[in-house]
Length: 314
Image (cartoon, rainbow, N blue to C red):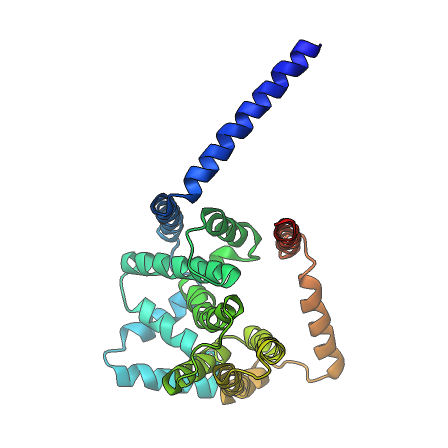
């Protein structure tokens, strides 16, 4: 028995020594980390392309395809966007992107949409770490979290009209959050030039104009970042103020689009306060749906506390 325990202990020590050496070598070779990271991103891209390829035009795509084929100039595209904004809804940029995608062959869309998905997961990774780093584990975690935890992955990522309104519309909000997130990793204010302040404002407008639910969350997070600046520096960065103002402008253009009211009347929605309250409660309960976001929330909490304990241990 003692011999068996001794052999097991020796074997564990050997494994630990090998692991320590490999980890040390890995940490000392950034070029190898980047190669493995880029290969991982490429593998994710291949998998998404293979999912995009067999996905056909469906539902709204078939309804919009004829209108897209009749567009032969930018003026016609803007005219279509104007009528959409005035007669159907505020998500005009998603509509423009959808029309542009429907104007090109599906084979080209498959490649462009794959690039868009890679931008999405890289921006998500940047918002997690606050810097550009070749973290294979993070990129793989983000990819599989989206793949398995998005309530409607095909609708949001692969379907042309859905990808335009959700995947591509998410890039600008994530870019704005990434700019703000970066400031948490440094001890000085960034983007305080006039050009930087203006560009962040424009980014804020497009981010707030992207999606109704996202705009509310972004405004709340914007105030959170401003409070962080106030506590850390004693003042709020002007680029964060300009970003929040941009969010309000974009959100107002989205929420109060004339088309929203036209669509509301056409679909005969109830104006009852009780019906609205019911819809709010229903949307909140969706977060606790095991088949939707609950698993992702649990995974996030586990990862958050694991990393926190690891950081505290260091």
